Amino acid sequence: MMKWNGDTGPTRSRSRSRISLAVVIALAAVAIAVFLILKPQQEPSVTTAFITASVKPSTIHRGEVVVLRWQSDNVKELYLTSGTDVRKLDSNGETLVSPTESTVFMFTGSDPSGRALRKEITLIVVQPLPSLLFTVEPTVVRKGGTATLQWTSTDATSVNITEVGDVPVSGTTVVAVKETTEYTITAIGLGGAVTQTVRLTILDSPSMFLVDPKFYHTAELYTVMGIGGKSFQVVGVQVPKGTKVRSPWSGEFYHGWGSIMGQSTLGVTVEYPSVINFQRGVSVDAVGLVFKKQDRMVAKGEIIATTDRDGKIFINFYMNLGDNIASRDEAMFRLHFPQLFNGTK
Picture 1 (cartoon, rainbow, N blue to C red):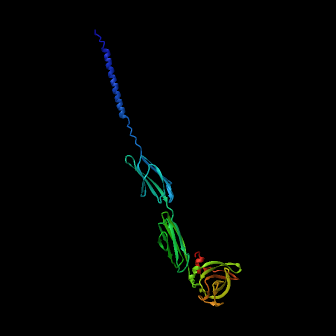
Picture 2 (cartoon, rainbow, N blue to C red):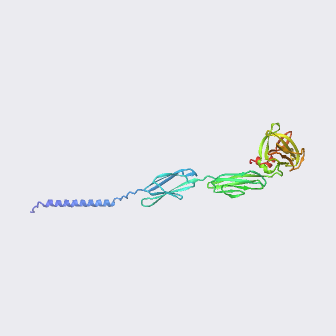
């Protein structure tokens, strides 16, 4: 019969318990290791660098002002370049801009790693049309005379005048032509082209002047009262004592007395043959007018009177329709005094 050892049972039980605990701990360690290996690794947190900018409106007319705004974050040394201008900026801000032509505003910088950053904003500037002023003075001259073209322009890069050629953007030039001529000026600029036209009218010169033509520039237009209270226009020319008045045509010569502008005057008249059905003529009145021959035929260019003092002589070209009905002879006035009857002086 086997004898019982009282310590054998409990001793084996404690050994098995220690082995089981070690296994559990080992398995737990393995599980933790596997978990750590398989767990996704998180990337380190990085702040994003950026530049934003805006300009509103994005299209303006030249001379207008607009606000340019920008924002940036985590950007080192932010710069703004426009054309040849470069300046350093704060991280955020705004500024007023008014460029004279379309402009690209370029913002540049770098992030902490040194990577270059860039943002561009384009502002469109609409250019104005050139402004232009073009004149000819006088607008009417006698054949052989001259006139002055004058022009001024702004916002023009080139200017051309027909019959003249390319000219500066502003200036004057003297022209002499034999026939009526239109001049057209064209000014071209960044905003487009504009044109204007002026007309220079050429008239034949009188074959015979009433007085020395050097006095014609003093001519002025006057309105006087005629027979029956009817008003009509005459031309006053300032002449010195001793001025000779000549007949502009061959015709029948008369003399008389009258009153012009409240002054008693002496007058001479020459009526000349006309191809139309009424009489044409010229009358010259002045204070102190001297004449010798009366009521006779005179030849073209013949002296019909002389002035005995400095003063004005008053000239009237007329058409006599009969029954004391007369009207102004427009063609003769325009021939002798175009500067008065064609809008220039």
